[in-house]
Length: 94
Image (cartoon, rainbow, N blue to C red; front, side, top):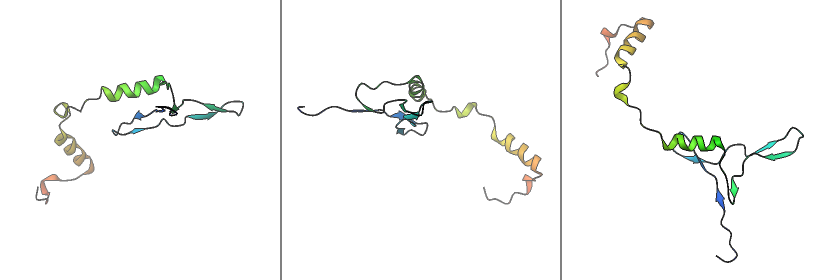
């Protein structure tokens, strides 16, 4: 690759399955100067501890075990009673 430089772009996974560049890479210091909090484009990029934590959380994510969740029918019945709704006269076909 003569005359070309490889460039890295830092992408961090989000909770919705997509990736994005880190937010707020620049900041204003106490003296009013521009400060770079993290480099997102360049060479030899490093990850902050917070970025590493987010990446590990996504890598180790597992689906929710729905069998271990509470019984929704009792929750809905309790909510109906609190609202004064009579479920016995429900006219829905399902």
